[in-house]
Length: 395
Ligand SMILES: [Zn+2]
Image 1 (cartoon, helix red, strand yellow):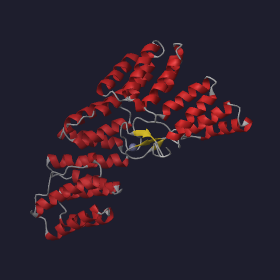
Image 2 (cartoon, rainbow, N blue to C red):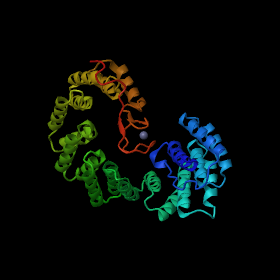
Image 3 (cartoon, helix red, strand yellow):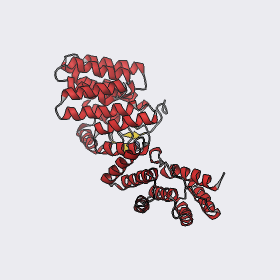
Image 4 (cartoon, rainbow, N blue to C red):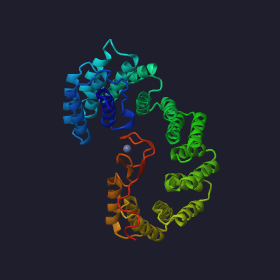
């Protein structure tokens, strides 16, 4: 392999490694187009070694030496900037990339690559307008640039511009040739929620139905659709939520409160009990259905039966604070513990912020309730209920 070829491969590897994330892997196609000195190859090799062992500071040092040997190389400058950005020195990265962009001798491709890098620096630094501008300029030269579309989509989602994000993500799906149906469905559900909040029920219904055509597993689309029907047509709302329960049984619990209310509205409260019993029969580990059934029993003045169900729920998920809390309420209703227990229940109800914790399966971000888009890693549909113990550890 010639030195130039080696350097091109190394720079591409560096771009991917330093970025750490697929979307940030700047594509450095420009190469060097010049002979690489033996000394520079040595520093380059050292830099890559440091990078693979996680010593990014040492890697930066080595790459600074490579640049000293090749001060005019666009590829080296861009890679160095990317490395600085990913090791937290965003301002230095911006300076280096900006200096490349200001050069008069760049090809169109090199100019677009440098803008792409600057866009990612700006995004990381929180300069959203500057990042947007850089990505848009990249797309003028290179409309198929995946990094620029990804950066734009992220900005649009952060700013809750769901329709723009939907178009960017659609474009990305075509470019990557991947199935982005689930993410697109979540975006349509958000479009629907916004429309519902701004009193545009027809637009909301269109968006929710669109979401469900894209993916039948996107819970907020069912919930939104049912909320639109609920007041005028409880039977239709019930049918939508029952469809959710049948299609995504592990997430059926998101529909429980609504279903209990709607069944009561049409005078058929017993259907909720039957639904919970059916779910428990289908999956004896379903502690959520036991909890919901226990709540229904307790509000029906049957706390003793509720406690039996809650005990079984705790056998399955001993760390579920909401089940412990519900057990305390049932004990209070039974008249046990007197005013002291009543006082304790009130205290626990106000103190338990994370009674029903959900956690992101990608970045482990933790929240007190499910969020459809993780606010930390920005992935869609990654939050699941937090389980401290394995399901059957006490069995
Ligand atoms: Zn996350």
